[in-house]
Image 1 (tube, rainbow, N blue to C red):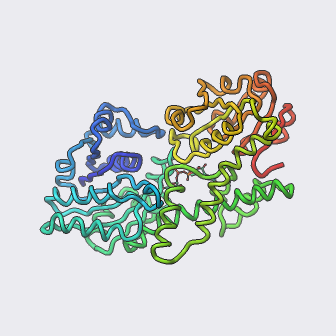
Image 2: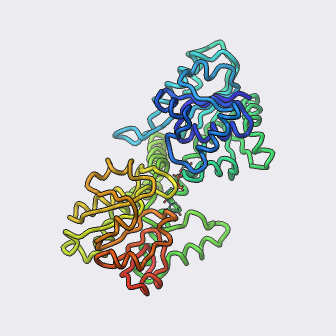
Image 3: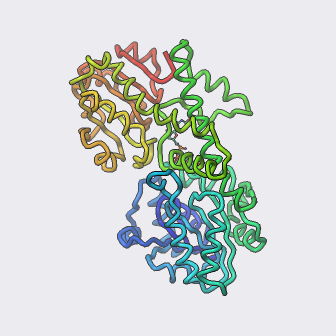
Length: 436
Ligand code: UDX
């Protein structure tokens, strides 16, 4: 089957490469010529483990091509995916659908064969209806159906998530579209990945509800962590103790500096806007957004506390280890490190940092931070070492070496990577999240 993927960003590229790996004939389309040229040269625009290899092998096999020309790219495709960005609209938090609508128009103007148009971009409820209207206006003669097929990929594990999904959600009321989509996902279907067919609107909402629910879970355990610190309990025990209850589940109960990234912050805001528009307020999500925003700055204050408070902290040096919103990505969008660095520099603390992949993107977001070539260079002369992102490389740091090169052995572990007793036995003043 020929598949066209319009938008070769994170979602489009991973999905396109995986579909090609299933044996489909895939064309990835993007209007950015620099991106397409570098993809043709085998250079990935993003860091995602395994992606370069997957793209390379499928290009070599002749199943995956790249183009800036939408008309030729969609020619003969039975399924045309829209996987362009839906950023938060400046000012009101609504998802900006201008890219989705523009693609729908262009697809409509150029479609010559019957095709299922599939929105993979995260789009508010009702977008499929609008996409259908735009296509119909642009091309009243051709047979098409519009389906919703949200993605649930985690950055850093996107290929595994695509190939071994918990579920595939397909929203359509059209029988022909169901058949085409079943064919698209047949290799996973054969592997018994659950295929959930719903209405298009339900499918659109499932994506937001899933991300919002996960954001609730994280924020819940983060607040429990704060309470643990006050009452002398251990949040990791709380996570285990509640997570063993099958109704709760053990995942997404790691306390930390707050969620960030390209999805949770944007999608929770967009869901709030939809709920407001339909006069069905979602107060839980409102609270989650506020609590998470405040938490990121609070983590900066936690570091200042570890330095002895506001007065003592002025003029001291902090070393931040990890800047990306989570490990195994170079993505800096809404990363807690940004607020932590800002809070520290505002308090007169000088900040050095190291991240295995994120420093290029981090630099413009935190101009006052001195980026260093490795963790130990950042730690040299520091008064506090802060683990902000749990990259594997920071899980087994040489604590003796840190003690020797830091000015004072103070460790603030915002991801609970180290054992408090061990760190203290090594002579560190150690603090973490939700453990005393
Ligand atoms: C998320 C969803 O998981 C994915 O299904 C969706 O399609 C896109 O958004 P992603 O943003 O890549 O994926 O990362 P994820 O692993 O979900 O982590 C999001 C944020 O939550 C990170 O900042 C992470 O550090 C934080 N997090 C996650 C916690 O603080 N604690 C947890 O237990 C889990």
